[in-house]
Every structure is written in C-alpha cells, then in structure tokens.
Image (cartoon, rainbow, N blue to C red):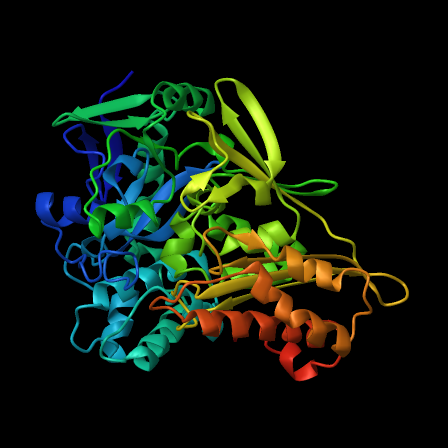
Length: 489
C-alpha cells in the first residue's frame, strides 16, 4: 500500500502525500504552485474560468479532456497529466496558436475568463481537426464571458482550427513520447491511502479493492466525477472524511452494446456515453448535450447521477421511462433491481451499507415505439432542471396504448413515475380526446414544491403541456414541434 499519488503537472513530475480529501485542484495550482493563470470565478463548475486539461492513458493512447479545477479534487489526479494555461506558450514567450488567435481576433475583453476560454479551445484544437461552428459552441458551453464577447472568440476558434500549424508549437505534441513514458511508469493497480491532518484519502487499485474498502468504510464518501460532491465542499463547506476516489477504475468505465440493450458502467462519464447513446437512443444523446458544459460532461458520471438520488437529476427520468435496471455491488455480491424502485425518499435509496452502484442496463425498445425526454430550465445550457419529463410509448395495431411509461424529475422528492397518468392512458386510443381527458391525472400523481427554479403551478401546467407535446410529436400533428426534438424547450 502506497501513501502518495503521482502525476505530471505541465512538465513536472509530482509525488504528493500532504493533501486532504477535499483539497481542490484549483487551490493546489494557485496557492501551492503559484500557477495563477487558472482563475476562480464561481467555485461550482459553472463559469469555466478555472478550466484546465487533464490527460490520461486510455487503451494505450493519451487522451485529454477539459475539466473544472474548482470542483476537481487532488485525490483524483493519480496517473494523470495536468495542463494549465502557463504551459501553452513557448519557452521564448511565443504564444501558442490558440492564444495568438485570441489576440488577433480580439477575443479578450476584461481578460478574467480568457485563460478558461483558451484552455477549452485548446482542448478542441487537440481533439478535432475541423470542428464546425456548432462543435465550437458546444466546446464553449461551460465557459461564461461576462463581457459578452463570444463572437470574436468563436472567430478565433474558427481561424485556428481551420489549418493546424506545426506541432512543434504545441507542448503536448512535442513532448508526447516523454509524457506517455512517465505516465506508464505510474502504477495504477496499487491501493493508495493518504493520511493528512487526521483525514484519509483512499484510492483503490481495482474494483475488488474498492469493494473491500467501501465495505470496511461504509460511511465514506465515494467520489467519481465530483460535479455534485465538489459543491458540497466549495458551497456547503462540508468536511468529508474518509473519501474514496474511483474515477480511475477501468472496471467501472465500460459501456457495451449487447444483444438486448446497453450496459453502462457506473464510472462512465456523460462524454464517454454520448456517442453510444446518441446512436441508439437519439433523444438521450440530445439530453446529454444539455447537462452542464463540456467540462462537467467530461467529469460527471451517469452512475453518480443515479446514486446521488437527486430529485432533479437529469438522467433518472429518461432511464426509468426506458425500463432501466440497476446492479449494486458489495462484499456480499451483487443484486439487481428496476431503477425506479431504487429511489425510496428524498436523500434515501434502496442501498445497504457498503453497497454501491456498479452498472446500469438500458434495454432496447421496439423499433415502432416512441421515446422522448424534455428538460425545462431557465437557461438552455449549463442549468439545472426545473422539471424533466420522459415518455416511452408503445401503440397497438389499432392505435391504442399498449404500454406507456412516464417519469418526471423535479416534481416529487425523488425521480418518479406518473402512475395515475399512465393508468388514464393505458388501453385508450391515442388521440386528442384521450390526452385531454388524461391531463388532470398529473394532479393526482404530483404535488410539486415552489422554489426559485419554478412555482408548483408552473411545474404542473408544464407537465401537462409536455404530455400534449409528446402526443403531437408522435401522432404526426406536430411537424413544427418535431424540429425542436428536445433541446429547444
């Protein structure tokens, strides 16, 4: 058992043992390493001013992703390469092409957010040869410019990605062989326990050791993506001890298309799941594009979104509507259940002490079935749902409802099926009269709260209107609505 983590910071190999389980990467960079180009804006993964790149060896190649340093914990850095804004320019002071493009196209105004924008564009520059404007906008979803200077930034991105210059200008391409060799030398299959000021950080070497560690420490906090747990620390000032980090466990990061459905490991991030889900369940792919910004999607996991049990988590309504099942693991073995039964009450799930979410299985639906999911939020991008509604419909040959599963988030203490509404629709002809007669059943299913995101009255009316929208889209009467599909709500 080791007592230190190892990683590369820019071009420096680091071995670190004096850190706490809730120390953030942002504080480490700014306070300990004096790399102050990375800024603190919101401290909740929302504004992108703290964006850095983190690289990891995946299937023998080096893969980089943008992340929010403000909610990324130091304990999750073992075996990675962290790249900050200071590393981009050449040793002689010559700017990286991405930086120079921001200068040439006047992409910086007050300058506070500029390092984060540069790092997001640099991540795109590394991973995409000829991104479209929509690709650029997607890459910048997680970066907020308070001076409203987006158009010059997009022009800078279009310019620099149109034709990449020599890789000699790029520190990662130039040093790729050295970076890979140093990362290969860091063992990832050994459990690490770091003790500091009476707190412990546990980094298990594999799934078996994680299972044993959590069985021995059932009150420990499990951290995968930290997109929610990070806010427990930065906003709620919660002290977490001990913390078990699992973001590096490859056994939890597989997503497989099987004969009857898709198996998603609990550690699969939104970004990793996107291509598979968008191909097989297009509406689900569009939903993922509405979850946070790219940095959040690179960090957050579907398993974490489920295990957290939040009533406003984006993925549970869609997964419940699709009939997903959940597999839990502990030292006693595994057990499976329909996902909808996992959520017991606010903050309470059907999970024994020492038991954790291992994977989620999403069954394929009949080809003639209909599925849609709608997210309602104040902002289109990077916002929490006021409510989220998911519908799965199977019609019989005579146009009657053979099967329907409807699930909502933001309407109750847990993600929940609309059972009374489903009963009002089952066996009925799928037509306007049926929908109009069934709408008020939602009042029997839910008594939502009023909060700063929406009033109870708004939530109920919107839920009813989304049912009507789903009917129009599935009956061929909503051609204009179909253009919006999901994301323009």
